[in-house]
Image (cartoon, rainbow, N blue to C red; front, side, top):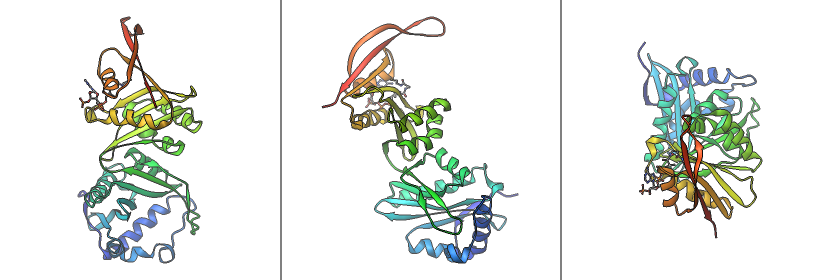
Length: 305
Ligand SMILES: CC(C)(COP(=O)(O)OP(=O)(O)OC[C@H]1O[C@@H](n2cnc3c(N)ncnc32)[C@H](O)[C@@H]1OP(=O)(O)O)[C@@H](O)C(=O)NCCC(=O)NCCS
């Protein structure tokens, strides 16, 4: 069978949209579909988004709608991703990613700097998809009071430039796939995310043009101090100021003293120097490699006024 083709959505795709959305909703227990009562916009969806200065796309295969996505401005430079649906047979093929990329590229071209979305708390497969693509949970759960008794998570992602955010407990839990793809070791990030909920740890995530690019992981266990335990930037994003932005953001955590350790050779030491941290001394043979060789460690600190 031919590959799906992306094209602008039309009002006369209504039957395809209704069939697709109905099948997706009915995958989840307790979801009730009442198109005329609750989603009447599906009858003329292209006009609905055009009136809001948004846009709508479909993936069409052999004359049939197999996927859809839309985006619209919410005000200022914030955009919303809407109506993200693909048939189960299309999942895992990259189609949803292709649709999302189309909508994000459009929003960016219109001046969008932040993309938000709402997703039913039952749609766990969708959450994994958004989280894999750098969206993090934001804010309170929304209660819709609809026939399906829907509760929705809010998700958000910066679309442009280098942006660093301090993750709260919900954001940290949702960022585990991004943290893992940057740095590996899922159990460690689960524990780190639960530490965030206890206010004993700060996790900072950096995006470059909407892609998770780097992280900083700081222990807050020691009262007035924040101890930088991990600073990592994905190789593809190095030497673009991502670590500098993460270290700068660490200064906003409200801790008067920041500390770190770095091997005495390599990029980390240079990065801490460049960010204005002070060397406090060098400890020889601090680490031992598997072959028994010693690795010296340099202690760093930075005092906050
Ligand atoms: C160290 C690391 C975080 C730096 O990330 P980065 O985003 O590339 O760093 P930045 O682009 O913000 O660099 C800021 C400044 O640090 C210095 N710097 C960074 N990497 C450097 C390198 N490889 N050699 C020399 N100087 C370097 C430069 O002064 C740079 O400014 P410039 O590019 O304008 O010259 C990254 O290389 C990394 O993740 N390494 C592996 C993990 C690691 O060592 N973590 C540190 C543990 S404490």
